Structure formats: structure tokens, C-alpha cells
Length: 160
Image 1 (cartoon, rainbow, N blue to C red):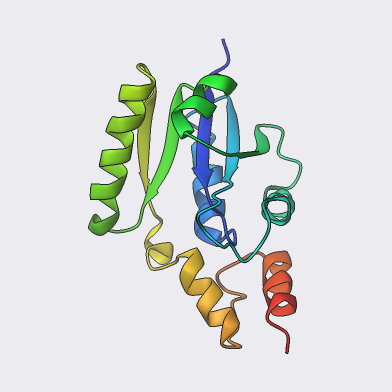
Image 2 (tube, rainbow, N blue to C red):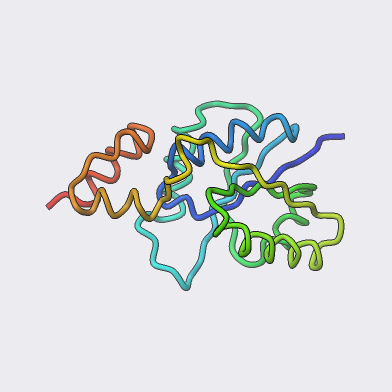
């Protein structure tokens, strides 16, 4: 039986922290669905299709990874794709309270669905998509924080 993991997020834009979690998740599941959330309440910098394309470049042709978009409840999407485990990253203690609440709610909505928390790599604990967007918006170099393709997309998005 194939154990399916689900790594959801906005990935706006994908960072080296996301890439690290994707690669480390391979030891936890046979197949990993990286799910780009479509949230009508937020105004993302990149469209869901652009984020999926960037993620495809980041993960390459890794056969264990499937890239998808989803809208609605994560628990419903997990059920739809047959996921047994949700992968979430923790950068700091401040992330835990929110993630803990979400894990309990997802398990309530979809009994049997487990959430696994992966602690961010030490050199990536400070990294977030919102910080990367802000640095890029202000003309800073984000090359150390994102894949070169993502860096180019950010430069183009914020070009004067």
C-alpha cells in the first residue's frame, strides 16, 4: 500500500525552506502531494499556476512528488487524494500553537489523518515567504533564500 503524504501551503513564493521540507518528507511517505492553497481571501503575489510552475522547477522531475492546487478544507482535500499524513514545518515556537490547533481540527474533520511536524533546518529557521517577498519588493537580493527561477520571477514581478 502506498503511503501518501500531503504538504500544503501557499508557497508564495516557494523558498529553500519549502524545498528542504519537501526533500526531507520523502522518508515519511511513498508519494508526496505538494498542495498549493488557493485562498480567495488573500491576494497572493503569484497565481496558483505560477506557484506550481515554480515548485516544478524547484523539485525537478522527482517521481515521488505530485504538484496540485486545492481550494477549501484541507481535511476534505486529504480525504480526496487518500493522504494519511499532513506534513507541516515549524520554524519557531510561535508556529506551534497555530499548527497544533490546525492538526487537531483536521483530525477531527478527518479521523485517522495525522500531522507530522518537521523542524526547520537551523540555517533556514528565519526564512518565510513574506520576508522573501518584502526583500524582493525593496530591491534586495533573494538568491540565498530561493531557487534561481524563483529569484528571477520575483525580480520580474517587482521590476520598475
